[in-house]
Every structure is written in structure tokens, then in C-alpha cells.
Length: 342
Image (tube, rainbow, N blue to C red; front, side, top):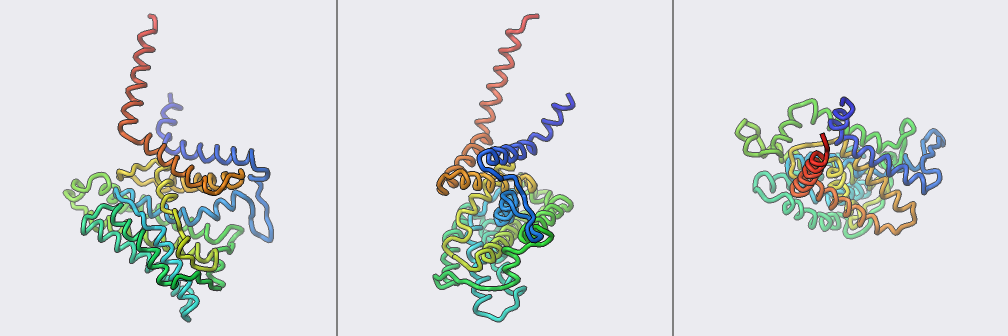
């Protein structure tokens, strides 16, 4: 009885964890040495470390996306914000004498401004989030191309190189950055009233206003946070390739971020934020990507697999699907009881 209660209580947590473990085991069975980790020159190397390394930009974007979805919103512009912040990072590094900290601050500032733009459209002008963020999604890459003048701008900076590919205590620095952001977000969302207020706004805007919660400011702050996280991701991706590619930087990353939040069990209808489960969702996506690539299948299959998973999860979360499943199991229970002899 206690075991059943434990499983029922932690079912939402166990499902993503079990999925991640199964994907890792299946991938390990078809890829020799997938689970091996080696220490070379004080740095850890291996496929599992590579998954963490490559998942960092998606994890940062997914953090912001989880908060936005918690307000019953969506942010389709994160990929464009990544391109813009990467372009700002590259152009300022090449064409100015700004210190690196100021370049990073300017790049983060562009992400915050993009978040303010989205937040104002949604919270002040009451434009539907998918439409409001679609505007910047379309225009953002054009803005990034204007910043780079349509060129792939390459740069060299020891600090940015360290952010993109450096190591600290045997782990990539970018992983430590992601861990710091995850911990900070968890503290703010779970140890302060802010997280509760944001979830309240996502669950019921009118009710939250009646109890004195400033819904517009909270929605605006959620989009600002999403823009900030996307800008951090853009800096890391630009530092990784030592350049800015306005056409391809962050391309389709909004799909990965939304998928990670949905895999965490959050409903697109808002009201709940699952940060740690969102990170597990990110690891599932990156492990799937690695599994597809190592299996020899073309890279184009990534998008098909991700879209299929999103569709399956959304269908499962659909109220009609839940009603059908509930009715199906009730009929089964009635049938079993009817066939049971006293």
C-alpha cells in the first residue's frame, strides 16, 4: 500500500527519469563505449559529458521557457534572441575595445530588451503570446543579419573561448554556468513568493488580480527572464564556434525548449512550473539527438522524432484523451467486478 502511494505521489518525477535511463541504456547497447568516461589532462571526456556539454544552451533556454509557459504563455522568439545576442557579442568583440565583461553585459542587455518587447506586447497590449513572440521570431534573424551585415563574424577572445570550451574542476565551464542558473532559478521560484505568484497568474489571471497580484508585471518579468536566458545561450553558442552565424544560431531551439517543458509534465495551459523535470527533459532531447546521430541515421530525423514526441505528449495531456482513458478503465473495472464470483 505504501509502495503504491509512493509511486502515485512521485509518478510525475519517475516517468521522465525512467525515460532518460532507458534512452541511455538503449543508446549504450548500440554504441560501444557510450558509458565510458576518461580523465585526460585533468578534464573529463566521454559521450555522457558531451551530452551535458551540448545540452547547456538548450537547458538555459528551457529554464526561461518553463517560467513563460507557467504564465500560460509561449516564447517562439528565443532562437532569434540567441542569434541577436551572438551577433552583438561577435561584432562588439571585433569592432570595439570594450572589455569582455562589458561585451557580455551588452549581449545580455539585448536579450533583456527583447524580453521587454515580448512582455509589453503580451501583458500591456494583450496580444496572444504565440503571435507576439512570432513577430520577433521572424524579425529577429533579420536584426541579427543587420548587426553582422550579412556576414559570419569570427572573433578571438580568451575569456569567451573559456566560456565556450573551457574547463573548471574537470567539467566544462558552460555546464557550471548552467548549474548556477538552475540553482538560482530554483531558489527564486521555490523559496520566494515570486514563483507562487507566477503560477497563480498562469492558473487564473482574474483570480490573481482579485487577491492583489500584479499580473501584468509578473508576465512581463517572465518574458524578460526568458530573453535573458536566451541571451546567455547565444553568448555560449557564439563562444563555442568563435563567431556569429545569424542564419543558423539557435535555429529550432525554441522547439527543443518547448519539448523539454512538455516532457517535464507541464501543461501549455500554464499554472505549474517544473524546473528540475524540465532539465531532465533537456537531457532526454540531447540524448535522443546523440542516439540518432550515433546510430547512423540522417540528422534530419531529429526534427521528425522531436515533433512526434511533442504530438504524443500533447495528445496524452488532452482532456478528451484523459476522459476516454478514465472511461475505458472504469469500464474494465466494472467488467472485472461483474465477472467475479462471490
